Structures are given as structure tokens and as C-alpha cells.
Length: 88
Image 1 (tube, one colour):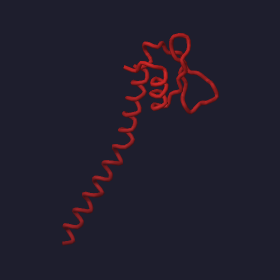
Image 2 (cartoon, rainbow, N blue to C red; image 1 turned 120 degrees about the vertical axis):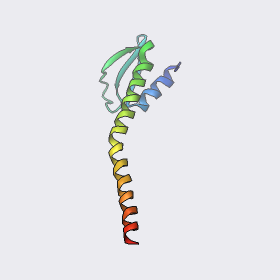
Image 3 (cartoon, rainbow, N blue to C red; image 1 turned 90 degrees about the horizontal axis):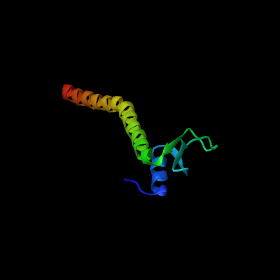
Image 4 (cartoon, helix red, strand yellow; image 1 turned 90 degrees about the vertical axis):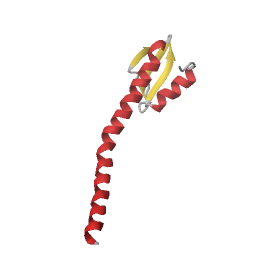
């Protein structure tokens, strides 16, 4: 459990969020938008679950994007192995 504003703000940065303590909760924006535009206000008791949802979403997207690359590299390596065997 994250207990202080500094840790919460840092956890938000790690998932691309800009958080600012405000009125018993947090103003939330995207870290890339530094113009001061806020997307939403999140109550303090929900902020950790919001950060965790963003973290899971990032992990799922990373897996979705990298899985085809990993598969392609695997099959390239297999083709090389098969080619070496066939040449011998």
C-alpha cells in the first residue's frame, strides 16, 4: 500500500500519469501533457487501483506488441538451425 503523496506521484509517473494532490484525492492527467489539463479527479482511496489498472494495461500492451517479434525471432533461429543441418 502506498502511503504518501510522493510515492503515489512517483507511481503515477511510472505509468505515464501526472498526479497532483487536491481536495482529498488526486487530479489526474497524462504525464506527456504538461499544459495543466486534468482528465479527472480520483478519490484518494481509489488512486492505487487506478495506477494498478494503468500498469496492467501497459503490460498487456507490451505483451501484445512484443509477442509477434519474439515468435518471428524464434522461427528465424529455427530456420537457421534447419538450414545448417541441411547443408551438412
